[in-house]
Amino acid sequence: MGRMIKSMKIYFDNAKLKTNRGFSVFGRNLLSFLKKHNHADTDDLDKADIHLAFITNSVYSKKVPIVQRLDGVYFYPNSSSMNSSILATYKRAKSVIIQSEFDKKVVVNLFGNHENISVIHNGTNLDVIKNIVVSKPSRFEVYDKIWMSASRWISRPNKRLNENVRYFLEHSGNNDCMFVAGPTDKDIIKHDRVFYFGEMKWEEYIGLLKMSNCFIHLAIADHCPNSVVEARACNCQIICSDLGGTQEIAGPNAIVIKDMDWDYKTPFNYKKPPLLDFSKVVANQYNVSIDINNTGREYLGVFKRVLRK
Image (cartoon, rainbow, N blue to C red; front, top):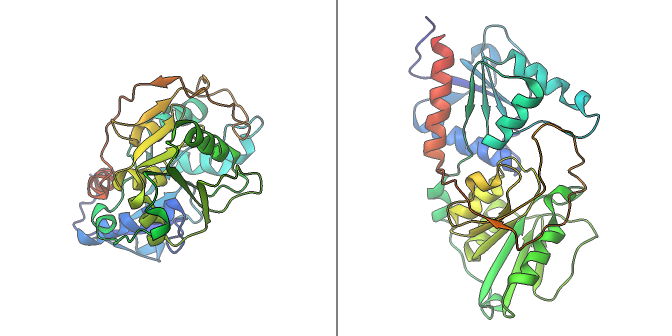
């Protein structure tokens, strides 16, 4: 039998907690939950009870069990070398947390099974989002409905920015507008009802989400995007593709568009995604929680099981 610890110390590895990347925001939300339940983070791996590795571990101690937080693996043609460090952590980890059922299929197909795998979808701090005050600029008061899309678009055609804008232009009312947050490439669709905001502070970004009615995220083979979790927390209706983990967190009222067929293992270049047929709408069967309190309790359950062994 292993140890039973009432107050755990967790070493966050590769979480980059001070940045505003999606996984970093998630890491901060998870840490806040853990601290509320008398657990803490530590910068000293030798003093940790759990080594939580975001994708890969950058350090290693035989004394501290690794829990790998894995969103997915590379499945480009000839990408096995890109997976080498992820696979090494996968084999070394005492337990693996995967962010979506989609990713579990891909990971198991490419890496083989692991004796301790849990699917835990991302969550966010609903109270923090609720308390962010929004003041809609007067120039947007004239619009009937606001649509939105957000990502770090640069060199990420798999996120399908122009497909998101095309969906808006084909499905919006003549007096609707669209917000696009995040840095973009030069190859964007320009339109007088589409507003590009570029890089933003997180609170400002949440403010835009809270003004919006719909959030479009037609990315191909995305894992469990925090942007969609946050959009749903802001009461946006989600529009997404069915290839990936996005639909799992999109909510029961999501509009889900049929994407290309895939067997979850054959490599393909997802940076050259096909155009979508927006008329091919499929039912969404998922309705998972996006509350960090529920997500955090599931993480704690994994940590405790690891320590019991």
